[in-house]
Image (cartoon, rainbow, N blue to C red; front, side, top):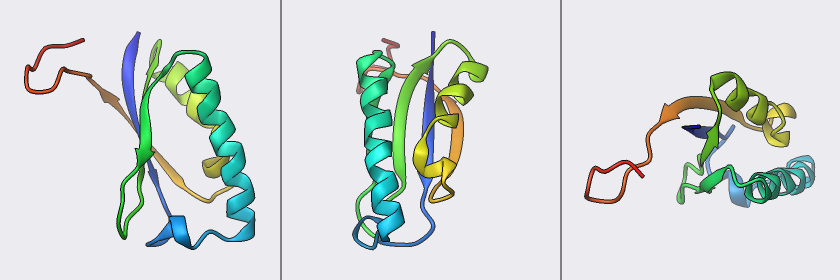
Length: 101
C-alpha cells in the first residue's frame, strides 16, 4: 500500500462561499464519495485550505498509481468539471520525528 496526496484546485477564489446551485448539489455527492473512502479505510485525512484559495487536500492509501487514479476518477466535483485534480505520491511521517508510520 502507498500513500497519495490529491489537490483539488478550485475555479475561483472563495469557492466555498460562492457555490452555484449545480456545484452545491454536486458537493453532496463529493461528501458521499469521501465517506466511502472513510468506510473502506483508505482515507488518511481530508479538508480544504482556508482563506481566499480553498484548495482541497486529501491524503489516502492505494495499492499503486493506477489504483489511486481509479479512486479519484470517481470523485464527483472533478468529474463534473467543478474542480481540477492533481495527484502526487506522498509519504506519511510522524510529526517532528521524520519516522514513517
